[in-house]
Length: 170
Image 1 (cartoon, rainbow, N blue to C red):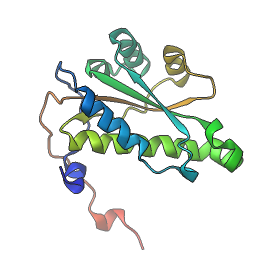
Image 2: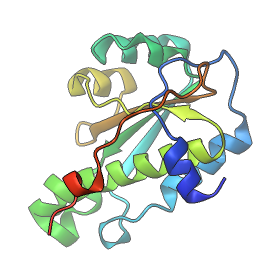
Image 3: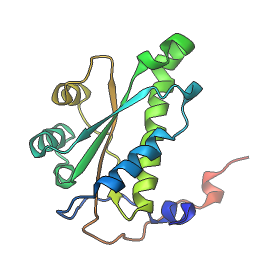
Image 4: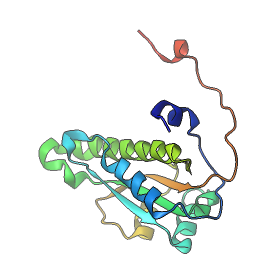
């Protein structure tokens, strides 16, 4: 699928088919994350892949009970890793750039998934400490986004967008 078509086709999927996405597709979307731009090319983020049903249910519970995420075959958790760019960028890198890096990588995965006909839904509502506990991540890693990925069970519905005249300012 062409990039602009993937951008138009992408929508927040909250119902997934009970089917795997396949190793090739999973590798392709993770490579998209790896190719995302980052501050100083330091890639100050980590991605935790969750396939275990029990852990997915735990993540769903601490994500303000968004249980649909547990139905996705793969759940990716994007964590900012401030230690990867603290030396080069100091506090600004540790407090801001790593969060931006993780966010950009997640957005690239969303577009790659859409290009492959897969669905995803960016989840930002969760209890950070609980996600860290469930995933057993280092204390310095900060969960930024949870992204369930799978085959959509429903077709996309049209969605209204702001007109550019309302969005873009001179």
